[in-house]
Length: 168
Image 1: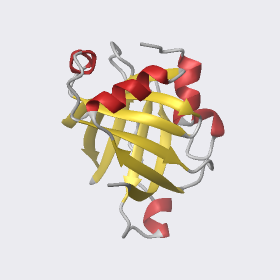
Image 2: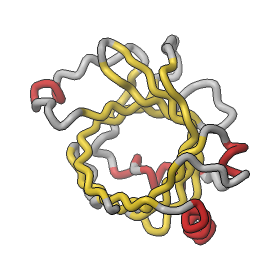
Image 3: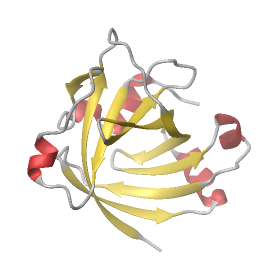
Image 4: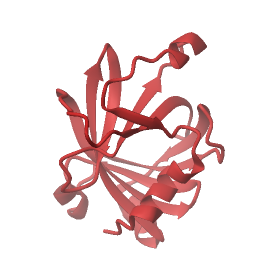
């Protein structure tokens, strides 16, 4: 079943010099295979070993709006493991990251790490549909949050994957 999602999120770089102390509530590996700049295969697995063993928790074909805006639409279509790996292998730009979920100041934050890294490079907060513009604009930022990149086209998932040259 195809799912249409409206995402409202703010994204930030991490300040490298600021101490980072968080309690992990959940973590998983996200593996992306970009078919185009705005369409990708997204595969969730518990570990990289699970990914390479084709032991996925879930997989999707995502098509996102092209704008770097606060609110974006995304079409997500669930994929079987076989279809996911087939599309992933056809992808020109591939990227793995470890996503850690934590709660800070009453807000859920998603921190993205590169494999074998001890420090995240990106933080993201996704708002619920019921959050108001006031809540979105007045988000309490943890000390380790750096420059906001929500609207910066150089920090789309595709561009990050391409620029980091992280090709598994």
